[in-house]
Length: 173
Image 1 (cartoon, rainbow, N blue to C red):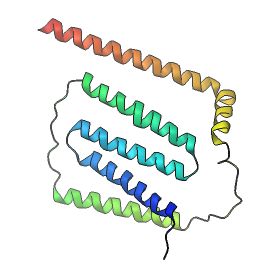
Image 2 (spheres, rainbow, N blue to C red):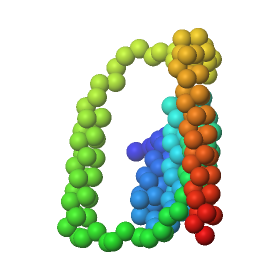
Image 3 (cartoon, rainbow, N blue to C red):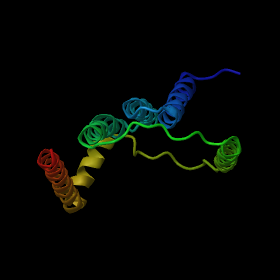
Image 4 (cartoon, rainbow, N blue to C red):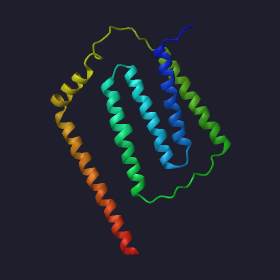
């Protein structure tokens, strides 16, 4: 049985995404978890490229792999935390978790394999960046601007809270 290059790339990207997610859950240091999360985000961006959604892939790289990861690292650096590992999970709990994951995988596989994929090809993949831009800046301009204001307020609030904690720490010493 011959596999196409697209299929092999899909398998590689899917395995990297799954491995990154598993590593993120299994690692004990927070910075290592963030690096594993970056691997997951980048491989998902590669999957978007395979789906001819280049704009979404670029946004995935810029927003998730870049901005969200940096915000997570800043949050880790600005907060006080103990880098403790969680107590080990008992074997029977691990078995239940593994059985749940396998059951979920079987249900998803059966649902996807029975999915009818007939239909006409659409032109959504042609000039998708232009289509998204037109929709974003015409139909959805108000929610877009409100989201930017909300993110700005959240950033200012985080800086104010971080400065208050620093001042309280200095006053207590």
